[in-house]
Every structure is written in C-alpha cells, then in structure tokens.
Length: 225
Image 1 (cartoon, rainbow, N blue to C red):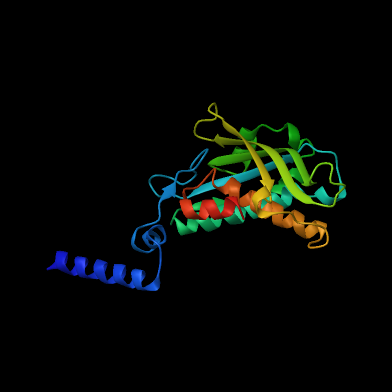
Image 2: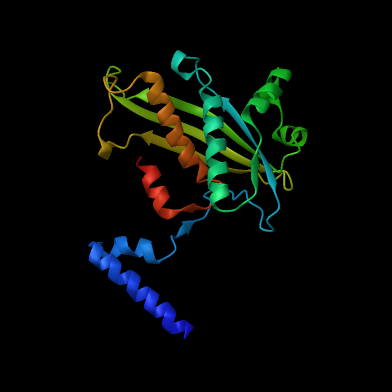
C-alpha cells in the first residue's frame, strides 16, 4: 500500500509539472533532492555535529586607495554572514567570531601582521583560523579609463586546523565580476562604492564555497550573479 501511495504521489507531481509546461531538466528540480558539492578547500562543520568556532583573519597587501579603505574588513563581514547562512541551511553548527572583535584584537596587537595563526587561534579559543591575504583588488576594466567596472581579485586562502597546526591547507582564489557574458556595468549605472560592495558580496559568496557544502544550482547562480 505504501509503495502504491508513493507511486500515486509521484505520478501526480509529474503530471502537474507536465501540465505547467516545464522541461525535463527543469522538472527534476521539483521531484529530486538538489545535489550538493563538497567544500572546495576545508569543510568547517564537525562530522559529529559538535559546534566549531572559526576566526576570519584578513590582510590586504595593497597600496591604500580611497575605494579600498577597510575593504578587507567588509569582505570579512560578508563572508562571515554567508558561511553562517549556508551552515544554518545545512543544519551545521559553525560559529564565526564577530569580525569587529577580531579588529579590536588587531588594534591591541600593533604587530598583528607578524602573529602566528596558531597564536590567533589560541587567543580566540578557535577550532579553525581562515587567513585571507588579498594580493589584488581592482574595480575597473584595464585600459578602459575607469568607464567600465570589472571587479578582479586574487586572494591567498589558508585554513589552519588547531588540532593539526602543521597541516596548513591553502588555495589561490581568483574572481572576475561581472562575467563578460553578463555585459558591462558603468559609473552611469552604479556608484563606485555601491559597485565595490556588490563585488565584495559576490566574492564572499564564492569564497564561502571553500568551507561549506553547497547546493550545485545555487553555486551556478552565484558564480554568474
């Protein structure tokens, strides 16, 4: 009887989808669980469902320019929000230390750039320290005389597991926004600071995939958003 009921429900859903005019690939999203991709660098969530604590440690190795002031802090805030959001969707217990508390810690340590990540993790009683070293950050298409926005960045991403401090996992992250296929954005459409914020939000979404399992369709949308 249960098998017959499941078959009846399946056929009913399938008939509704066909009536609505959905294509076969589109309709699969409605009747099948959405596939997930694994974290691309290090999955933060604990296998035994225990809560884990993470510190985001950012450093921007760039000449100070007005549009980039505190861009590393803004990226940390957006990334913390994104990891938290997806972790909650996955029903995983991942706590990101508040970025403003990390900045307060840096202000109490004038030599913070020379601190070992193990020391940072110890002081915050963290399970992981994510280190983001921003090597490149630009907002404009090269040779376009600042008339076309094209966010580009290169970030060295490292994750320190406090349980295995000698096994530092690293990966280079690059991003370009918006994608060429989506056309150009110009200063006539959006202000410089508004574009910077939108670009950093895009970067945060993509960076979050390094640390959490994520829905494949969501990734496809965010990659080209």
